[in-house]
Length: 147
Image 1 (cartoon, rainbow, N blue to C red):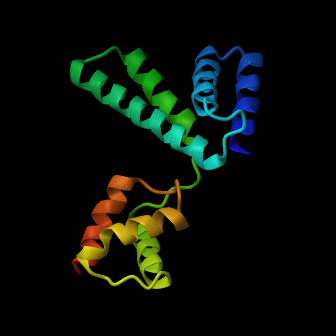
Image 2: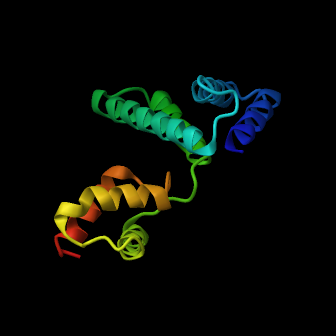
Image 3: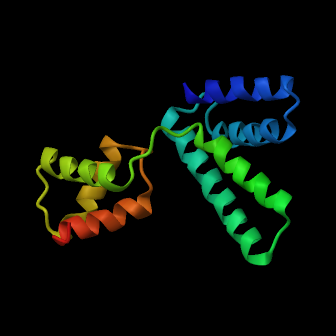
């Protein structure tokens, strides 16, 4: 299970005296384990994505406000650490192929009115493996015949 890997990595960070990694993974474990001591991988992935989104927002804010280079590096490092716990991500052409396969497998009418059905089916077949915003834009383009 993913939560066990994160716990092991936190222990390694403690032994290596990597305070930032240890603290980040500790907070991630605490948040993901609020409702269940052994959360399933989908739950953990949801929290990892949430943490990545927050770190990206912090990085953008630091870049806009001219935050210190150290703080920007810390935010970037946080994103890199968290990305280790996500399954390989579908992007670009591979995401478009996955969308087309889902439409075919689920026998969904390729019309803009079926966008919700396509997104739901994509989530069932490829949970946690794509960026929702990117997928949504691709689904719109595919269903409107622009791809």
